[in-house]
Image (cartoon, rainbow, N blue to C red; front, side, top):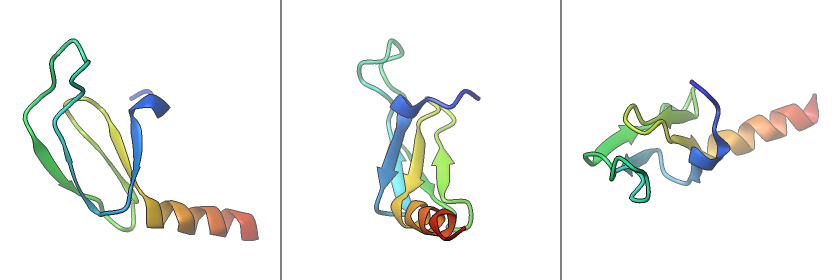
Length: 68
């Protein structure tokens, strides 16, 4: 899978939903819900490949990298 920052979103909740991109040529996809695993810190929609990054996990990884 290609890393596409345009299809990434930082979220404040570990439970997220996705229904696709309305401006995408596919016209979106069925509404799906995901639970972000706290250890992994993100989830990727299998339909549109949008990546949802949990903000708290991102903060932890940035602070860990800053201390290194």
